[in-house]
Amino acid sequence: MKDAKEAGFSGIEVSDNLLKIDPRKKKAAISKAVKEFGLTVMGEVGRKEGSMTKEELIADVENCLDAGASIVLLEAHELFHGESGRRFWMNWTKKSLSKESCSSFLSLCSRM
Image (cartoon, rainbow, N blue to C red; front, side, top):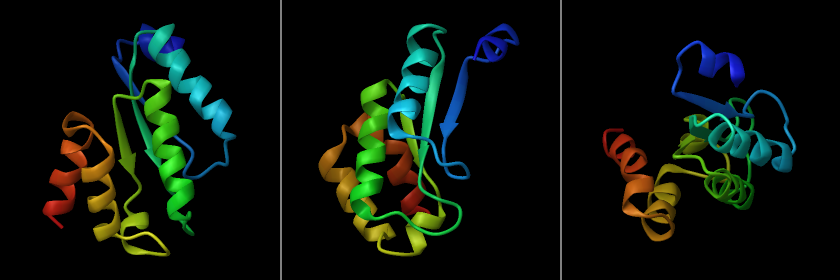
């Protein structure tokens, strides 16, 4: 994070879609990036291979937002495979998140 800030980056993505990271460590990394380094954080949830349950994904989204992520990105694989799906995520996003938090996600879904 320090290197990213010193290199002039204003934001980073924190993702565990290829590596398993304990949710507490992911939350701590996001919080540190925001609070200690003033970075904008994009949290990413979901897997590139395999799928998470809806409950796991929702918990991960909430974890990222609680830690201070400005936006949460959903791995595209989760929109089309496994227990989750595009319609579920569009409905959940509309019901659960503020307009500002979900506008990019809904815009992406509406173009699919």
